[in-house]
Amino acid sequence: MTNILSNEQIKKYYHQVLIDSHLSLSCLNKKVGKMIANKIKKRFANPNLSFFILIGRDSNKYGFELLEELKHYYKNVVCFYNTALADLNEILKQTFDVIIDCFLPVESEQITDNEKKVLHLVNQAKAYKIAIDLPSGIIENNGVALEDAFLANLCYAIQFYRYGHFFNDGMDYYQKIEVLKIFNQDTMTSSIHLLDAVDFKNILPKRKHHSNKGSYGKCVLISGCKETPGAALLASKAYAALKVGIGYATIAIPNSLYPLYALQHPENIYYLLDDENGHIQFQEQQLMPLLQYDVVTIGMGLSNHEATYQCVQYFLKHYEKTLILDADALNALSMHDLSILNDKKCQVILTPHLKEFSRLLHCELSEIEKSPVDLAMAFAKKYQVVLLLKSHVHLIADSNHSYIVNNGNPCLAKAGSGDVVSGILTGLCGYLNYQLSKVVAIACYVLGMASNSAIVNESEYSITASDIIQQLGKVMKKLQRKDD
Image (cartoon, rainbow, N blue to C red; front, side):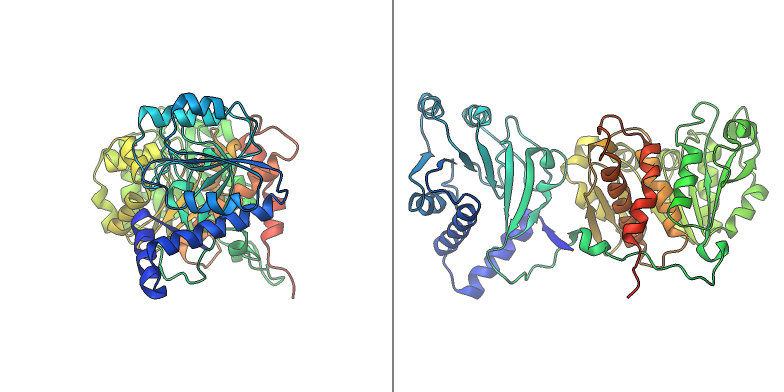
């Protein structure tokens, strides 16, 4: 588990480091520049390699120190600093082995026309490219890319990961990232952490011989309507829950749609709800038996009919276990009053993607993109829920903790991926006894691992949600606790 810090937190950290270590700012910058140079020299040991260092406005705090260090080792080190664009064109006619980006300060949120032209020219050059802290043109606190942001092969994150490394465009502007520790002490307490393989090692308990299907919980997924009968991969969702270990998986569907789903997966159980023209009707006596389930997931393909909201309201008031609100359940909430979340008796997980979250907050998508962490954490705390904000990285927030899981790949950018992670989450919530936000993180990690397994022999363009589900058995085996 690794800290991820905002710009404000990092400033506080360095301020405290200067006080504790009795260092001046110039000495700190020199120390950092030397450390970066040593890292680069280890990676590129040949002193005959050529380097081009891009230094920009505000006398980038590490750039000049790095330049001097590299000049002592490599025979050909060229620097660009306040040089005319015509000169830059001439410089870049040379062939450089490595280009290092120390151009814009990490806190930059604007870029001049001249700086855009510089970055555009450098991006066209053929060389191995290294960004220091963040690629120039990536906004530190949200990862939004300014025009012509620097495209790096490698990013050295100094001391900490930053929000901008993961959210929005950030991950598309480097191929690899390494944290370069300058100081051993991490005195900052971060509000958000990146989870990696170490955090999930042996995470699944070994199943006992003396157990049965009832030992591992039962779930129900309330899903489907006439217009979107396959919107949530209904049978596959429940099948995903079974694949990750729950004992029973039930799909509650409109009665008239049963022929569409019958025997799609014979392991699933079907619970038929009264409907009108392919849409479920709110019938309290029909929902009452579902209160005995360990996990209730509602929303996939239900549409925004009044009955959807009534069902959500019913479970919030009467259910006492784990309720997962997905898709149209979230849309129904956004069209009514979110205050009903305050009347709940159960644990609640909301699983919106960015657009669904913007509907819940009644704001523009750009506002979510600008402050995803702060808004997610504030929402989770206000309503005392666990929020899974789905994107190319998964952000999990509850009242006290926030996590990022980013082990997936672009094949997940396809319809059905969100449904699969909800199916995985439903299954894991049925029997895992961890803190609920941790269970959500496990579900996201399992999804990412399954997507990585799926692209071993196929293109990421070709992978479907069903392909990912088929990889769950391999993934679960890797995460299962081994014998001592």
